[in-house]
Length: 503
Image (cartoon, rainbow, N blue to C red; front, side, top):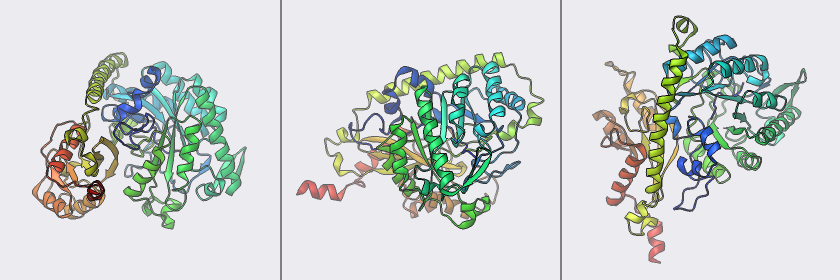
């Protein structure tokens, strides 16, 4: 199974004006150095652009059931509506059904910009089903970007076909470049009509992945590399992976946490392999960000996900429902073009504003005393649009940002159980709230549109300051405003820096 993520970056080392264009923490900085033709490819792609994921939607169609490798972190589930992770689908579609679904979704969700095939097996292990779908979509929905996500085993022999269908975004999951480590992740591959195991299998897979990556880059196709962080197996090794794929021309690196709950039935889950803690994931992403652009907003989507990143509207577009829909796709394209143009105008205005304010940091406000103030993590409840516009009790995830004297950078997201579902029990409130507080470990503030008394009190007790004063404000501006308030209150004095200054 190939991970159902088609995915940009946001991260890296953040210093006052000193970060390289390839690893800076701001999406605008990361895109501004790119040629215009590359910016055009990614600016409305919700997976390749952290900024775009607040505005544009994507969908995946599950037309590829077969897989040519086995991963210890994978268990493909069919006809499943209760799990949100790669490899899970409710319906496996024929190419014809997939095209009809894409047109229905694109007509109903005008923010949609991207269609990806990412499973539930591997798209390139199902070449006819995959390329039949792409061929029909190129003809019938020419305004939709097409993407594919693959484990890379069959990639080299498919590169020409990918290029022929104008697919200019490809994701390869590369978890290692050392066959010894690979043997701990992949029990077998199916290669040249044979099942091959162990180090030999991992060596073949790695060679095919690297060859495919080089071929795609040579043809000007943007490549994102996905890597699953498996503590104790490949976590330290992924730094080497990042260096190698960057050297070969990969555009983005997406280091994702292992999902290993026992109830999912994966080998790792059953054997008790733990998932990484948020702090471990952030540290590894920061370490890799010195080598290339990092994607930090990945949601590890289902293979049939529909909607904005972080949401799934797939149950609105099941086969039985789209059969009764009347679709005027020509009119839908006109409407979608107008909405996309309006979004682009808003994003351009935000980028221009960010550029104008780039020199205005907390450092200048504090008259050169920025070294005294440590960075702070803040959680944000948002339902999209780049705004603080969600009630604390309605959030199923929080976006985490780091504020520092250099500015604001996106760190990642933390999933939670919804605290309030609108009834008297509020879905076992106490356990849900306790889970949210655990998920927000390391954050010193949580920004939301509203918050009730009970969670407010418990958050304060846990050392997390609730804040509902910036409802409907842009996220980064609000985060920086709260950071300035923390500085003015004297909460962020960096004792080490002060002692060094006095010395």
